[in-house]
Image (tube, rainbow, N blue to C red; front, side, top):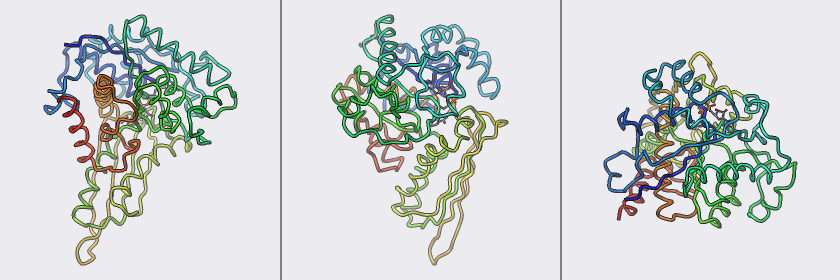
Length: 398
Ligand SMILES: NC(=O)c1ccc[n+]([C@@H]2O[C@H](COP(=O)([O-])OP(=O)(O)OC[C@H]3O[C@@H](n4cnc5c(N)ncnc54)[C@H](O)[C@@H]3O)[C@@H](O)[C@H]2O)c1
């Protein structure tokens, strides 16, 4: 049995999703919670020999100095989402993780994210210097903990769309790293730092990350793997389950409106129109792509600070049936954003670790069911995406 330890590196480790994932991982390692909400704990994956929770060691990058345990305590108390006794029981482990969290970079992240950052972050001149520092942080963690692989997961705030498309080949992108005017955003610099060193990279956010073709080329050259983007956790998950039903019954969707209201730090960042643009694009395209035609769609995201992490999505679907009769489906989804997202982050880490053992190289399309905008997969039908995962894991299990 493989008992080696595996490194997890969370970018944005002290946020709602990052902190909740770390609390959950600690609680799993201490046997304090059951496995509800974890996809990788489903019965069909038991034969796959996924890594035990106890084998993971965590570190990360952040741009805020607040201690991790305090961030988790405040967040879970303000949102009344987790028993304070559970948080207290995990405090010691969260403090240990905190000692391994390093200052990140806010290069080209836009005003809304830069405003969250503490003032004393390192200020390198060029992307090359930033990548070298981030990679040095990874290496120091691997050396200190005697780990042979690292899975880097981006759970940081959503960046605005990048203004210029990066050059298509790795050699051209690499040549531009000394340019202090480069517009490459932080999410892509983290991805390059990880993939260039041979580590796995997963982008849970709509930010650019490892999406550019040149970064995929780097991953393949380094014999490693990556995937994204934007975790599919709530309203969009419902869309990917319901839209195939309308398609199968030949019910013509006339319009699909989704209003989302929430008030956590993610909502605050997404209140900036530039950052919101990345998220709306990611949430909007899926209905069109599943149906094969373009009904009128509206996606709105509104920041209501009093709601905190509790997101309400109201969807109104107007559709036409036999003899031209228009009808309506409405649903209301009310969930804690971070409680929905955190287990998926942990599942992605376990499946990516299996992909590492299987020496999988390049994008990981078998993880499509976890994402709103899965790289290179145009089939947004949740059931078929999930069958891809089952099929791939089945092969892994032999
Ligand atoms: N259900 C969900 O919550 C969900 C679903 C899909 C995607 N996402 C995405 O996951 C991300 C995290 O969501 P959240 O609710 O935890 O947000 P959050 O604002 O609570 O946390 C983000 C964290 O990232 C840190 N950060 C920001 N920029 C950074 C950088 N450049 N380097 C290092 N750290 C940085 C922030 O300080 C903060 O601690 C967002 O991009 C969000 O859109 C969340």
